[in-house]
Structure formats: structure tokens, C-alpha cells
Figure (tube, rainbow, N blue to C red):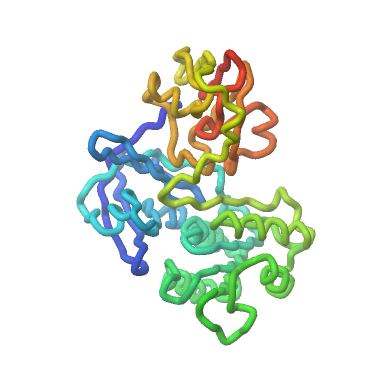
Length: 351
């Protein structure tokens, strides 16, 4: 289904650190149901600059039931994040799509949660932690890695959450460039440190859910160590965090024959479009030339917005951080990371 955007008024832009801020939106009554979100979900924002459309996806940091609020960290030279942090003002409007994403917690269910985050990866974790802790039968242990105290996003809100919930919320700050009183909390939150920290801080065999969010290294190290320590993979949920710039496309150029095309059929909102597409361009990029309504956000294989099912032909998906193995087995792909291989391909966005 094509992504629909709605103009939301900015309620507040709150500085968090020198290079980050939280942006809160007001939602009109007729859109309240549409913008009701689950903890962990994201908002996709759209902006047109010099006639070119740009989209970015940011995780919601507010607890379930509150006004939608996103956390943004500036990227050097980042057109979108710099605008949100340094130029956007209360009262202005932003084009925003309805909440989305598969990284979602269910606060109504009691559970024991482990959150591991680094940097701006704390954004969805704050939403998850605040939401699940509203259930008095739930507990959260959070390991949060940063360079130094001044780079910690939402430091005060995390402290308030600790004061409010006491022993049900165990918060551990790990700083890589600032010594801490406890040696174990000083350094990078890498595999070696996780192997030491986790058995001390968490009853791993009693966990119901593990939530991971941050850069690729943190995700890979955490998953490796958790599996080593016997945590079942189905309990581990992760979201890779690329905030402003999509990651580079990883594709072997020698697999493309210059000038060769495939006839690609796109099905979206019940309408079918077929066109010749170059095999050295992604399905999404090529199809956008004839279908401007295609859904997308990050174009980095992270958010899953451009998900579609291959119902005919063969494609090559070069990167995937959004689809579950079961979805891949059912022939779903991320069109922003998939290239046509066979002479004819059909992808269904409505599947």
C-alpha cells in the first residue's frame, strides 16, 4: 500500500545533547486513531527540498498513549537531521506517515525485559521501557552504551524512570571515553563486556524478551553473546539504527551485464504496471520512475517499508535487516535492496 502522509503540527523541539533533540507532534482529533502507536514503532517524515523528495524514519521515544515524539541525533552534513534539530520550530508543520515497524512490545503482557542500546538506539528503548513498566508485573534491565556523560540522550528521563519504578528498572550506563567508579561499566559495550555483564545483571533463563537497538557491531555482538548464554533466538528482537544516511549498497558489480534489462511488473493498491528495468539498479529506484506512489523510507534495508513479495521471476536481495527468516522463505524482499535477475519479475506490494 502506498505511504500516506499527513501534516502534523510541531508541539515542541527539546534539545537533549549538543547534537540531538526530541520533536513532539500534535495530532488532530480525526487522526488520533491512525497515529496511536505501539512502543518501539517509528514515524517516517517527508520533506521536499528543491523539488526533490526526501524521507527519513525515526523511532518514537514516547510511552504508549502519549503524543508521538521522536528522538533525532544530528549526522555531520545530514540535511534532514540538522533541519529537525536546528531549524524546526514549534507551530510549524511536518509531513508524517502513520506509525509503522515490526519492532514492537506489548505492554499489556507481564514480562521480564532486557534492553541493550547504544547512542541514539535508546530512542525506541525509552518507549518500550516506559510502556512495559506501566504494568506492575513487568521488569526491565537496560544496558546503555555511550562515549561520555554529555552524549547520553534522554539522561534525565531515564533517571526519572528509575526513580519512579525503583528495583523494577535496573539501568546501567556504560561509557567508553569516561571512567566510571565500576571498571565493568567503563569501556565499549562489546562482546567481551557483555559476556561479563549479562550473567551478573540478568537472570537470562527467566527473560521473556530481549530488545537490541544500535549500530551493526552492537547488534551482532549482542546476538552472539546472548545465543552463547542460551537465550533462544525467538526472544531476541533487534532494530539496526541508521539515522540520516542510508548505508552503501553492497552488490558485486561483476554480476551485472551492462545494458541488460528485465521486464518488471509492480502490483500496488490493485494497480499493475510493467516496464523494462536495468539490472544494475534496485527494483525500488527503477520502479519509482513509473510509480511515484511506491512505499519507502530509509532505502537502507533497515525499516522494511518497501517490503514486497516476489510472485514471479528471480531477484537478488543484497542486504536485509528488516525481514524475518519466515518472510524471506515466503519470497518477501526489500525492494530497495533487490535487483532483477531473470528476464521477467513480478513483485506484489499488496501481498
